[in-house]
Image (cartoon, rainbow, N blue to C red):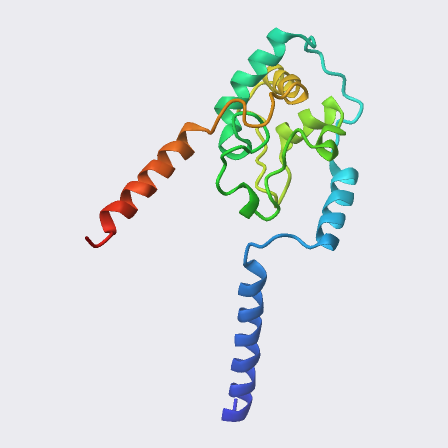
Length: 175
């Protein structure tokens, strides 16, 4: 390979790497990307006709809330609205407000399917094998009866992180 060919190949390779790295940057999805993702979810998310075997009562919602607090609050907040989750809007795609109309339109079976299988390239993991079916269905009951946005406060991990961050900044200030 002569010097000129090598330069062209190196330039082309550098351009590809640069484009790849730019494409990897987390940013808010465009309107087109949102539409494609929404349409894809409507085609891919299963469970549409799965009936929820868990009673729709306060006890089931409370048990579901307990499981939700343990597994989901780091991304979705204590209340399911991502309250106090500092990175929620910076995710690509952003962490959804589970109380939003476009989310609540899913059937109980679709929510269970999402909890079980996750949603690829969204940050939503699948919990199959980690949470049993009854717990997932109870979590669906909780999602159907979410508390008012902000009413449960901020997850403790983000309260501590904010306090530690403020403390670090105070210690670094010149006096």
